[in-house]
Structures are given as structure tokens and as C-alpha cells.
Length: 162
Image 1 (tube, rainbow, N blue to C red):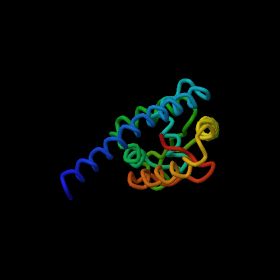
Image 2 (image 1 turned 90 degrees about the horizontal axis):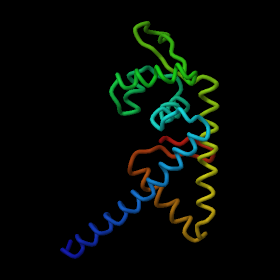
Image 3 (image 1 turned 90 degrees about the vertical axis):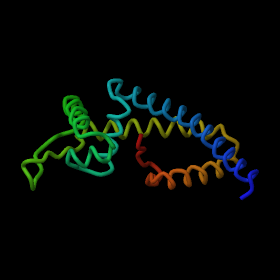
Image 4 (image 1 turned 120 degrees about the horizontal axis):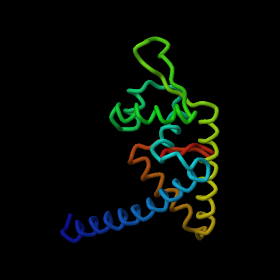
């Protein structure tokens, strides 16, 4: 590759990175707003925990910590708060009394559904203002980006990991 080609690639990566940083600010704002509209005491990290439990079902604390990519002690404190809020249940593991399993309560499922519906509405409002000829390109680019990042695809009506 020529020196100019290397510069072009670097400039392209920089431009894409800048655009993604700008988009991520918007997405975080939408995430925060959709959560606050439904439960103003819930943090983004706590909501992400609820979404993981919604999509994965009951998990032990070590697995949850791994899925959240945080220390088990951090997960333990978060679980305590979510149990106190009535959003998740904690119970002994059916095969090992030394482990605990956490799962969503009905209230937790309701919060995930309501927040996700609000987030979809807010995103759809923004997409509706985009020129139609740019929408397909956005879908292709975001699909490639999330695939490269290892994020599972979400179908219509699916949950969003935050």
C-alpha cells in the first residue's frame, strides 16, 4: 500500500470513529431518556443487567458478571439494588446450594418491555426524518459494525443491550 493509501485508510477510520462517537452520544441520550421515562431510579448499567436476564434467562452471579464484563463484587451490589427494587429475584441454584441464580420478576419484565418500546419509538422518530435513500446504507453500515463488534443481531421488537 502506498503512503497515500495508508493516509486515506487512517483518515477514513478517523472519520468513521468521529461519526460513531457522535452517534453514540445520541444513542446514550435516547437510552437515558427511555429509562428515565419508565423508572427514574434505574441506571443504564442496571437496565443492561435486566436486558441480559430478559434475553438469557436465569443465570448465576459469576455468569452475570462475565456477561456484564465487571467484577463479581460489582455484580453483587447491583443485584442487591435490583432485588430491593423488585426487578429481579435471587434464589439458590437448583443444582448447587453454594451458588445463587438471578432472574427477572414480572415487574422487571414489564420495565424491560416499556423501556424498549420507548427506545424504539424515539429511534423510529429520528429514522423517519432521514432521507429514504440514506436509510439502507445506515442499516448495512450498522449491521457490519455490530457484527464486527460481536453484538448479536436484534430482530423487530427485540431488546437492546446498552
